[in-house]
Image (cartoon, rainbow, N blue to C red; front, top):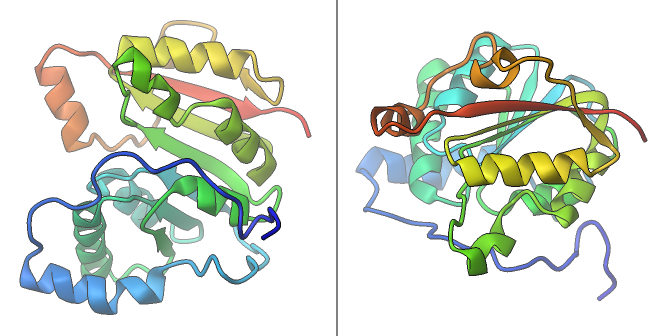
Length: 226
């Protein structure tokens, strides 16, 4: 099979995809609502007529649901392999009657390959798995192949927003993004990376990290050239 955007081989998606058993209504939402909101990556991507944001690994969906609620004229795509997180988000989508969210339960790299060029205005990557062991660092999402994917899918001026509470991962990310010519880090003072973005929604994970004494950093990179 030829290597096309719809059929490109990827490395294994590491980490668990399922936790404790879903509640009955969550299972019903996964069965009935998730198929209606799931992107069909087997078909060519449609033209994107509205501003579109992508969240990679939305966890419990706290940020994604708040952003979609506050910005009804923006379309959101959420990627998350963990079915329990997907089920939580589905319940919030149903509760709020949102129509501007589409989902992919799986690897965000597949969605990035499927998207048309210059289609994304903003990408969120908050608290990704840091894979702290040295032998596992190749599994981190911030890597050359994924930066190539992001650069292709994001239009000039689009933002990549990254948050982590792991010092090593923030340094890793800065080193790779600053060495990648298609993105620029334009921070001018500590306030630019120690304070969250306007309208920030704190996740449960962030609250736990801060309670344990780990201070997050908030990095913004701008897509600068084609």
